[in-house]
Length: 625
Image (cartoon, rainbow, N blue to C red; front, side, top):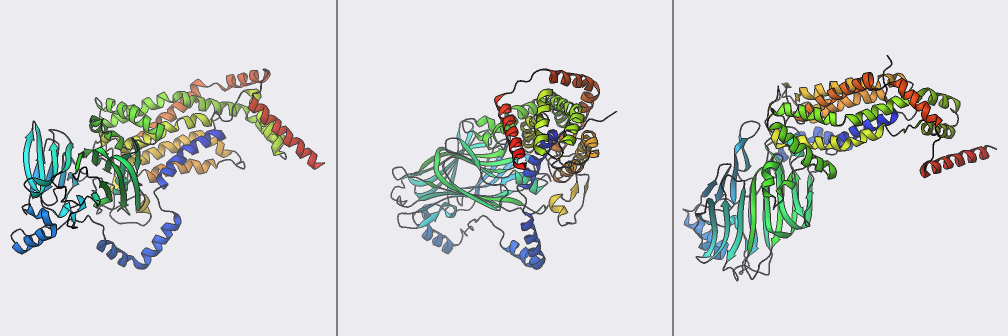
């Protein structure tokens, strides 16, 4: 039985889909020139570079505590901070905690020095910390009336705990006197990741120099939580809401990126599945933002991903400062973030651009959440995949119908090619005339493939952003949001370790095999044909597609590879069903012959194209004379 073959436009559509994949994987990779330069430099000064990296590793500056028992040190501190020396210089922390979140706030700086998730652990079973061991700094930088440049990270604050109903309230005051102070006020609700946070001054008109800027400074070094640090780092980035609701991001792949923006509502320092967010009721008028990448290669020793920095000027009103804000320390989970619709924190999740993100957020995310509410997480992926492929089966049918029509017309197209092999213009003109009479569009095989692109890309973004998949196991995969490993090694192999990693994942292998069989079934006969100029090399495509899956998906979420494996299996079954039980080539041939007998009315575009080709052909004949 003669196999069905792929027409040119179907191949182009298939290549376009995989082209998007290639672009997304390669957009964060160094250029070949950069790789060569890096390799040459590494060979020449490898030992020196390693020493320099250790010595110059970027860090968040944290003030050293003073010895409060040393009267000389205390006197020196009071002299350096001027009027704020009134505050008692006492080291210590105050704890705030509820059912989901544990915080520690330091007397030195009045800032949060530890933020820990109570219900989540990292890939190696360590509690998830967003703030720990000096990886963060939050402070105000201002000038006093006596021209001292002060930073609140150097000031001591006096803590005071009270209750507001069921809420815990912590007031941290850096005092000038009992009635004059700078206050940080934290308010924690039960079972909530969001804290109320207020910065205000009282009686400091004349203590703070209102003619000099007051800058809010917030720095954080992202703590690694995932098994693959490079994969985690792809979805770790600084996101912000500005200009009346516009959502923008700093680059996740560049070594360093910075922007100055206006009218900022919130800032999100996202660490893939967990986020630290600062939201302001009164928007920041302007802010300088930066993101520095710390990940150079896949390594289990890498502890941090990026350094984020924000510097935003604040304004005094009547010589005093008052800002109502919110801190969020919690999961990047739509079910949690949707609770804060007035702040729009769900927009921090990277669903994807435009219509792709819309499909991901409003179709696939709620649909999967519904399925996983009563099915095991891996089974829910399989069921969702089956339903998606069935929903797209009419599009698949259209594509195969186009292939069948092109196959029926092949003898006549071959005859035209042989007859006008020395006249490309006439050959194209006659071919288009044949398509028109037969009622066949050469683009009809490509369009169905292009129609699937929004679904394809939305699902590509769904799996890395679905918090529901995190640390959910299925078969041999321990975590559907990370890679599944069936074999690992510790030796670092140049190039291979960089692109493939130090492990073998089974789901990408299965998906690659499924793609290979699909390509074999659909391109087998086309490869046996003589390769025409301008035609894609079908054999190359048949091997390239599985290779892309095998290499680049090795470090991606196993849930994504599971989806592609099941999706390609279903596509194969659908293709075989359409080929063997639905399409009848004899009926298609008879219909085409009937179409040829009917007068075909040209539209304006077709008429214009025909006239242009006839004119070109006439000019060619005239020129030969």
